[in-house]
Image 1 (spheres, rainbow, N blue to C red):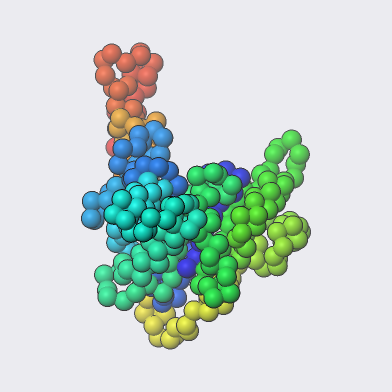
Image 2 (tube, helix red, strand yellow; image 1 turned 90 degrees about the vertical axis):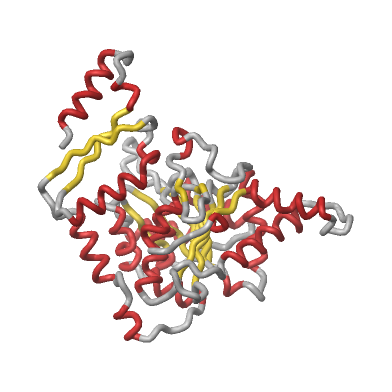
Length: 365
């Protein structure tokens, strides 16, 4: 299993990093599953406002989940279930139902060991469920912990993963920590202090990072990587730069160039895959490279107006935009999606908003 945590800010890119790690493993012939942990009390994402969390992604079994599971399905070509999304609400509901049935035989029900035990059992069970249309168990399960390390909501989940630090479980979990390297224009140089504090919080929580994913605007210098490694108590090669790229399909290539796959295979002691199997995998890294380059190669633009109630937040229609992007690649076009708030098209809307909204619709193709 691979645990992906985040620090400094939420929305640092854990979902794309998790999906990209999965792409590397799948392209090498391994079977991959994914779990998203959302440390909120809600049972699922079904009642969320898109203004707050973006779109609610609906799975094949009707599960209403976080949009990151949509990324997993698209990147990894898998079919997940509602059990692949763990929330605090689901865990507490399960534990309370067990207590009401008398399963705990009258003992005091506590966060440790009962809540953490339920989390551990859930992950162990779901990590073994086939998700690629075959009957074979996944070789690796990638687990993304929502929020940031140090959040009070996520503490029971972090405590549950401490069990994997014991010698008997040590080789079963690899911890990847994604954090932000800030680059204030006033200083003229990147600052690593927030990331240092983030790694310190992770270690204080009982988890030891195996890889540090450094999100930044520009590529990291060798000197900066060495500085991060020194403060993070890891080797320089364990510091992975994930700078801004022209499209998200380049992120797996970025990780591949920095030998992330080899480090995962060695850390988890994964079995060797036959070379013929690797060559037969689709998509392989050659095809993935072609896709990422193709995405940036088109000059002819198509302008599409996406009208919706929640258009102020782009993530509210993430799956629709991704579907349009995929279609544009096949049509050999560069797509420009303009979001239009449907309320601004009403006659009762403020005059400027009304005019701009209709102009956006009229100029769309």
